[in-house]
Length: 94
Length: 223
Image 1: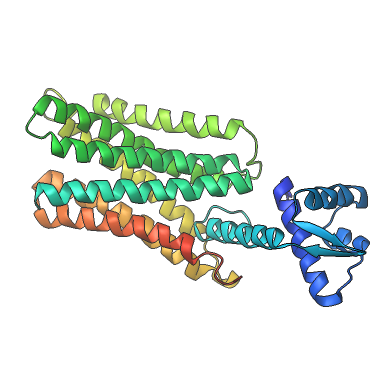
Image 2: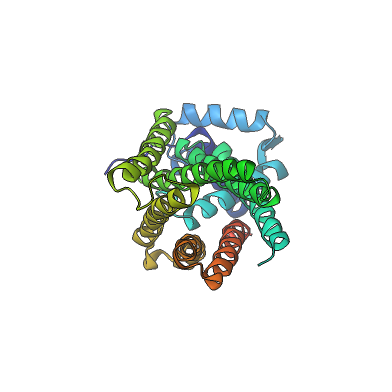
């Protein structure tokens, strides 16, 4: 089966969602674990994380990473559009 | 049905179609799937077709202007449904982010519209010169085929096991109503039935509203 390449936004969405879930569960998530769950090589994951910090979707509170309100809004909007496309029969992930 | 009500119905349809254009552009901006661009293009064509029909009703005393506007309506409506159907067709393909997909959707839509004109030559109507009304029937049959494909696509992709079947029902009902609207207009064109004419307008308004509701119902589970 041919696996579809993820877009940058899909990768950002995946990282943000996993990071938020890990934060809820552990409070202090391991970055290697988040990279592993997001199915990304660590160097690409770091680039992705740096970008998310740069655009204000993730912030550093000392040693701790926090998914900001902007990040949470992005997750919500992405899930909504994804669900909309699924309901419209336009997504391959149906 | 009075002209005023019809004009209002056309302009309400324009507004509803433009809302859908906005939703699909938003989806494209976020997902970057090129095939998703076919939908805002399709719904823009549909919005312009309702606009031209509304204008033709306003200028119905001037036959020359009214007929020209009806020609625009025919072509834009045909393109609208063609773009929507081919967007669905190409959404099944895996490599959806490549740029040539939009060109492919456009090419397929142009060819299918040209085929309607070819059908007019190959299977000519009884009348000597094809008027807007005669061509209208040919386009309606093409529109029924385009919408039929969308309905087929939705049925084929609905899987009861994944729990999203109820989500599909809304889109499926909306496109089925759009199909019914075209079918009713075909019947109205043949026998002049007022019931079919009213049904066509109501079905179209309900279908566009249902498509907008699909967006508002989306993401509720996550909230």
